[in-house]
Length: 156
Image (cartoon, rainbow, N blue to C red):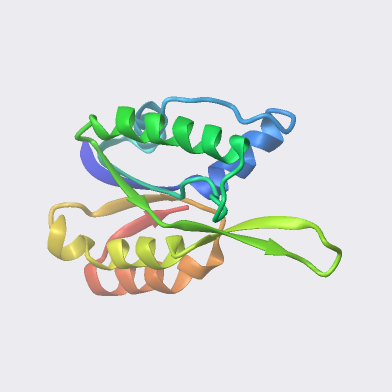
């Protein structure tokens, strides 16, 4: 079987697990998930590129923010031990909309993912198929570029 790289936008999967879990995040094995997705396509997952943001921290973090950050740090430390995973972190921005509602937005994840996708041909010349787990149409131009330049197949 051919090898593949799996790129996961955790922001997308987080929203999906909340939807499936009734607003509660579902816990799952990240590398196992990537391997199962690859196997369904008759591929072997060589590496998982995992894009994530630490929880928001205000200038004076609340107890809840501190608790979330501790949990995140523990999670990252645990999965960092797996050499099959490349963790790519950016940041979260807190936005208060015109209705006074608080929203949190990932910043820089799309750019980082696009950069990594653009380096595949040089960094992984034997890889011909890529799996991207995201719902963001901002990746369409880089996917087209990869296909055009290298003949790679990208499955969405």
